[in-house]
Image (cartoon, rainbow, N blue to C red; front, side):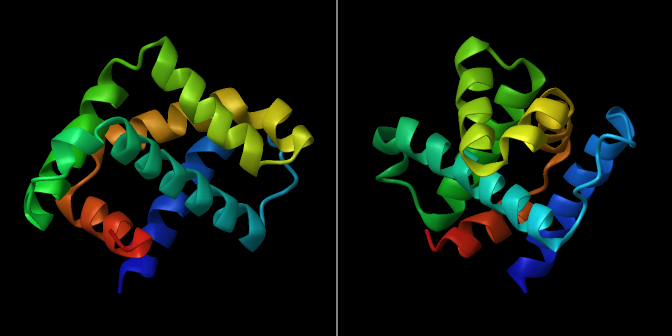
Length: 132
């Protein structure tokens, strides 16, 4: 069931964010925050698909998964200015102002770490969740 894997990924991001953030300020850990992180994760996948739609259009389902997996890993190992800006833009649209102010840097780092170690199964779950 893909949502379980996506939920696990979101929980990992949240736990990593909490570790990197001042826990006293981080008082908004709840199921809604997990849903927000899932929304951000799916938003990041949408950005990758939109930016690379010419390369993705002729690929099979497995080819799309492998291509997106490589794009996530490449962007996570060495995120450039545009990558950071796009991810932060998705976070800013999804999180409240207070959440964004308190945890945007640590959450970006948590997403970057997840991207470095993301598996084929996780990417498949994300794509299935997004109905690609």
